[in-house]
Image 1: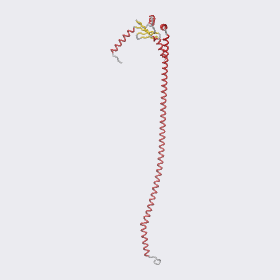
Image 2: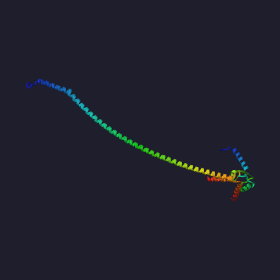
Image 3: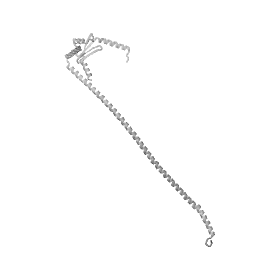
Length: 163
Length: 91
C-alpha cells in the first residue's frame, strides 16, 4: 500500500472522516432537504387538489347559479303569464261590467226619454184641450145673447122630451 | 180619526137639519134670470125633483143651459159642463 503511495492510517482516517461526513451530511443536510422537498411536493399536491376542488366547486356553483337563474327566469315568466292572464281576465270582467252598466244606463235613459216624451205629449194634449175649451168658452161668452140662451134652454127641454 | 160621539151626534143633527131645509128647495142655476114659465117648464121635465120652493141663481160662467140642485141631487145641463166633458175626452 505504501508502494502505491497510500497511507493505510490516512486511508482509515479518511474513511472514518468520509463516514462521519456522510453520516452528518445525511443527518443534517440531505435528510432535512429531502424531507423539505417531500413536504413541498405534498403541499404542492395538496394545493393542486384544493385548486381542483375549488375549480369543481366554482363550476358547481356556476352550474347552480345558472340553474337558479333559469329557475328564476322560468318562475318570472310563469308569474308574468299568470299576472297577464289575471289582468286579461280582469280586463274582460271590467269591460263586461262597463258594457252592462252602459246598457243599463242606455235602457234607463231610453225609458226615461219615453216617459218624458209621453209626459210632454200628455201636457201638450192637456194644454191644447184647455186652450181649445177656453177659446170656445170665450167665443160662446161673446157670441151668445140672452135670446140665444133662451133658445138653448128650449132646445134642451125639447131634447129631454124626446128621450 | 176618531170623533167624540157627542160631537158626531151634533154634526149628524146639524147635517140632517140643513138637508131637511134644502131638501124642499129646488135651485135652478142659469146664465140669465129665468121667467116663471121657464122655471115651470123645467120643473115639469124633472118629476124626480119634488119641491115647494123654487130658487133661481144666476151664474154667467155656465155659458148656456142650466143646473138643477135639490139636497144631494144635481143635474148639470150647462154648456160649461159639456165643454168640461169635451176637454176630458180630448185629453
